[in-house]
Amino acid sequence: MPTPISHWISGKSVAGTSGNTAPVYNPATGEQTGAVDLASVEEVNTAVAAAKGALHAWSRTSLSKRSAVLFAFRELVHQHVDDLAAILTAEHGKVLADAKGEVSRGLENVEFATGIPQLMKGDYSEHAGTGVDVYSIRQPVGVVAGITPFNFPAMVPLWMCANAIACGNTFVLKPSEKDPSASLLIADLWKRAGLPDGVFNVVHGDKLSVDTLLDHPDVAALSFVGSTPIAKYIYERGTANGKRVQALGGAKNHMVVLPDADIDLAADSAVSAAYGAAGERCMAISVCVTVGDVADDLVPAISKRLPSLRIGDGSKDGNEMGPLITAEHRDKVASYIDAGEKAGATVTVDGRTAEVPEEGFFLGTTLLDNVTPEMTVYTDEIFGPVLSVVRCETFDEALQLVNDNPYANGTAIFTRDGGAAREFQSEVQVGMVGINVPIPVPVAYYSFGGWKDSLFGDTHMYGPEGIAFYTRGKVVTSRWPDPATSSVDLGFPTNR
Ligand code: NAD
Image (cartoon, rainbow, N blue to C red; front, side):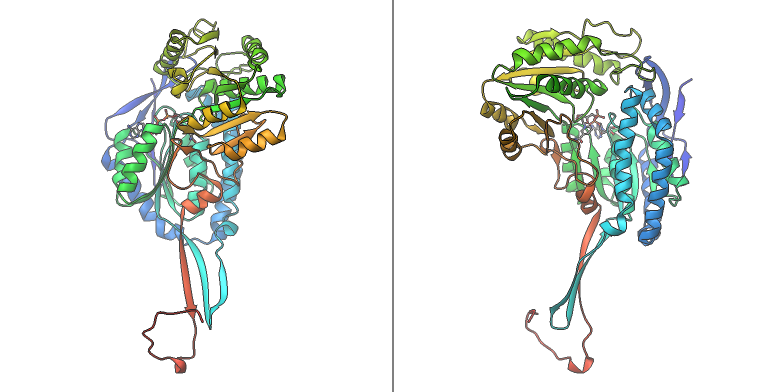
């Protein structure tokens, strides 16, 4: 029998009452292991009401007490890295080492948020006018919601909730219905860390739950991470309802390799970044842009590395790449390879015919050479273990290709020429850039976000921009004059 997966509201597990559930699979076996409750409008309203009820007290809890909860939470997540990773592997399919990496990148954000007393400090100007002082404070925005994708079921919720809660907001998480269980262990750890009930809530669901959050008058802000069409929809509907919204979308990340690059470094990096987590990363490299004749060395170097990758159940030691999230997604990825081949790409390594476990949603690694910009393997985000090689003659042509793409999440350049790398960093129209680093996910004290169709909204996620997103500024102008000096003055106040 699949395990029922319930909501978490007001500090406890709450079984769903809508009668609707969605299947949760172990992608490595293809077996249905769970049935997640899909919330009704009333159930989402209950979670928002719990968050609203907890808001006033939490927003007025001292910074040092909030920080103490964050420190306790940090310790608990740290102690439970293996448990969280096992859940991720069981429901997402990524291999255990990768799952632990995911948790540790999420944990960085908790560590950042422990510094909330420092992060929430305002400014103070004495004598801004004669006898007048001016100072700024930052206050929480209220009840905030997080809607997260299947590919990082622990890290992305931690990107959001650690800062949101540290800033004094209360939080409603709507995780991906494909791998929902990590969010419940996170909820339990928050409770054990001393977070008051109602400050962190989880509602599972589909479009109905998301739309209810988007329209709810008590939800002040919404953070979203997922695919571009949904990100755009979330941004438009949320902002039309007067909410603050940051909506991070999909990606097509290009790795430019210049003729002077170290071939082994570039090949190792391309393989790691294209096929890690079976390509189901928003910062995966999906296009290798070769300049000059570097492809003649790079393509064989990448091909040579692929047969030795161990593909299998992520919970078993030694496997390096797991399955895709669902059978449908695997088939969709394979259909992109069909389309690329038909359109004239060279299938240098073919994942469709690779030897992979029969059970589960596995697909081998694919390398497509001679891909051109009009092919769907180039235009679309495939989100699978497929790397396309586009050959360019010059640096300028490669840069133009990257800049013409509507996605602009991450990009990388591989070269030994500092001047070329600096020019690339300056001219490329992409939010996160790696120089000889294939997956440039910023550390938690910077902020994460793409440009163009990879992010809708003004602020990037986590780090300083996360704190800005989850707080509102207020500026106070004050004076303490001698009442005896008071007089009526209808002129506009000046600072002299
Ligand atoms: P998705 O857009 O299908 O789903 C994301 C969330 O939106 C889920 O919680 C889902 O339940 C909800 N949702 C789905 N359809 C909806 C609809 N019609 N209306 C309202 N809500 C809806 O994304 P996914 O398949 O879970 O995740 C993969 C995508 O996320 C990829 O495109 C990937 O690039 C992107 N991603 C981006 C980043 C980033 O930082 N930019 C990070 C991780 C993943």
